[in-house]
Image (cartoon, rainbow, N blue to C red):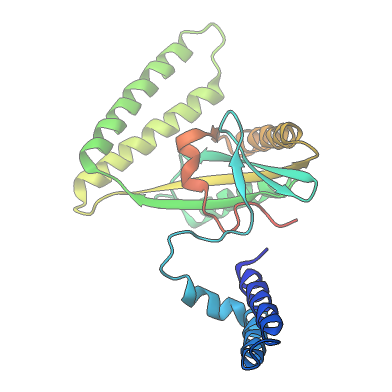
Length: 253
């Protein structure tokens, strides 16, 4: 029940009490009429009045009530007798458009469009922008570069080298190199951009909804990995918390 409806029904209840009491004290009948008018205002225009009455409260009314799955890797909401599970994924894009020609930018956009159009299930793609701490960020980048170098060396030591995996790692290292170079030249604090995908599935139970959502997530990950050669990671626990407040969190059904 929406909050404006709650206020409306409460006003009606107060009005009924006044009507019953007006048998012993007639002026209360006027108050019952006023209560009925207030109930009508809340029911018809509650979206305007209720925010003013509750602006001092810290609780925020959301469209649905949510809960986490036991593994904290999905968000669950109940709709009628069914459940909807939403899972979140992070796309690691090791490409920058600043050093590409117009034709290369156009080609990359077409790759993205083809990847999106090949998906059969609805998804939501969002970006999260936030500022980073310079010192910690530089140390983290240096650690990532060292880790990538180790992974490239291990990959090249294999009898059958996966050239595609090596190419992705080298592009990732090049991205970090360019990012470090631009940070040393700039006086502005770096901002991070995360690309997040969410998808939902419905089931008659919580487990079936989560299972269906994860199946969709695996298909999405395979599509992006194959179509754009990017890494897609599942988000869970603390990493998933930054995704909680996107509209109603779940695509409309």
